[in-house]
Every structure is written in C-alpha cells, then in structure tokens.
Length: 72
Figure 1 (tube, helix red, strand yellow):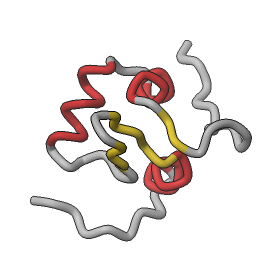
Figure 2 (cartoon, one colour):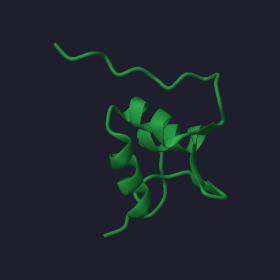
Figure 3 (cartoon, rainbow, N blue to C red):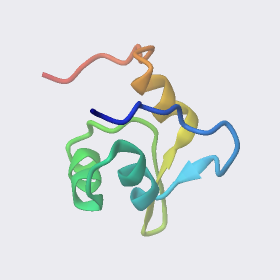
Figure 4 (tube, helix red, strand yellow):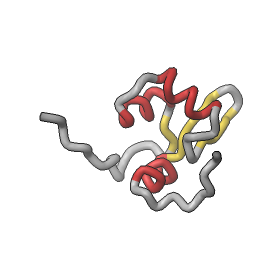
C-alpha cells in the first residue's frame, strides 16, 4: 500500500533548498539539480551560488495550475 501524498505545509520557509525539494518530491538531491539544469523545475531562484525554489510556485505547478508553456 502506498503512502498518501501530502500537501506541502502552508507554514515554513518561502524558499526551499534542493534537499527540501528532494524530500518533498521523494527523489534525490541530484535529481532536483538535474531538473533545475534542464529548466523543468519551476520557481528556481539563484542567490549567489545557492539554488533555492519558491515554495508557492512549486506547489502551484504540482497542483496542475501551472500555465507556463511546456518545453518540447
């Protein structure tokens, strides 16, 4: 039996680290960085050398409300 998919908590940091995104998506940190490199992860913000992801944009995309054109 698979675990239920839980919603991202409303409270918490506005910007997520790659490790936090990986934990939420149940994947590896390396996979998150590959998604970022390919432009397939929405809400990416670069602050110096740090790569962060906007929580609200990620949640909207996962909810299926993302209106960005898809890359082909």
